[in-house]
Amino acid sequence: MISVAFLSTPGLMDPLEPLLRRELPGLTCASWPEEASREAELAVCWKPQAGALAAMPNLKLIHSIAAGVDNILADPSVPDRPVCRIVDPDISVAMTEFVLWSTLYFHRDFDRVIDNARTGAWHRYAQRAPQDTRVGILGLGTLGTDAARRLVDLGFSVSAWSRSAKTADGIRTFSGAAALDAFLGEVDILVSLLPLTPSTLGLLNAERLSRLPKGAALVLCSRGEHLIADDLVALLRTGHLRGAVLDVFEREPLPADHPLWREPGVLVTPHMAAIASWMVIAQQIAENVRRLKRGEPLLNAVDRARGY
Ligand code: NAP
Image 1 (cartoon, rainbow, N blue to C red):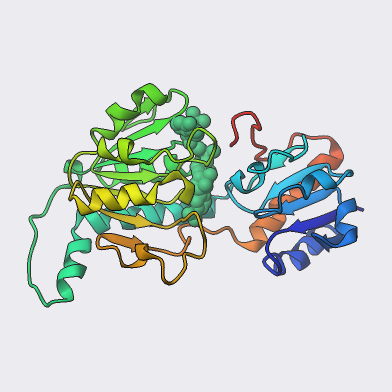
Image 2: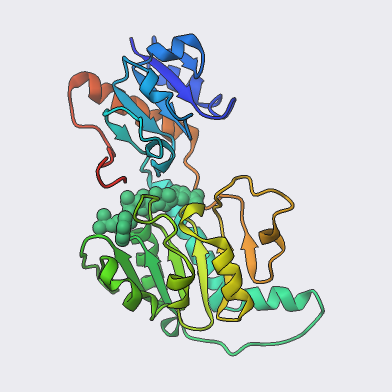
């Protein structure tokens, strides 16, 4: 028998509980801050309250319900236990669809045409070949690699930036902080697929975004905290940047009166790029519980020192 505590905003994980019970017969469940949740061995989290995990002395495994673990590791008091994330081919497919759509949105001038349609302006833009559009991906991990490969298949000129050096067929690779400016200097559409860590927090600021060539666009599908939104808006207003598709925000849901909704050139989407199904989440958590019991290596455990 194992006991689980759900740590999230109230009600968010309601669909998960029956699925997890089916996977793990005899499971006892509680939601933080119920008294019983303090005794749990497994914590299933989305933005747990600071200090909550440290107040659970029997904890053996901390599981994110998402691909990212920044929502957990943001709390410095998180105890030294394995932290796992969800990695699922369907998430990669969904993210790649989102990146392909966003790339085509700028590459085929849909941003301009949709704008022109508001005033009935019939204007055709010169058609470009995909190899003439340079797509740069920040982060060549699970999601970045899948998106980059599909963009290469479509004929785009693709480059990518990662922490460690990598080689990938058809992709120009850059690595490390020293190579970031060179990478940014040759990108028409910048796609962020980085994890949020202390070294990537606020990375997309005025200095970095100014390194992009004039007329470049941003696609942010990583975390809102990667971007200094005011710096983006300033560069859009000077005309240095062409536009942005923003899927993630420091504060979610983005309030209805937030100026980004109405900023010309910005398209806001509601953190929809890639969402794991509750079934997959339940299956992966259950598999890790079984592995934990058998003393086997866990799936998709993150490196606490790296932060992802
Ligand atoms: P991942 O497999 O861990 O890959 C992360 C990549 O980022 C790796 O290539 C890593 O470099 C690179 N990286 C990390 N820190 C870096 C640094 N300081 N400098 C340069 N490169 C760095 O992560 P993933 O599964 O692809 O997911 C990426 C992120 O996407 C998640 O953390 C999450 O925030 C976001 N996400 C968003 C949605 C959405 O719906 N919007 C959905 C799912 C995920 P190395 O290869 O050298 O380690």
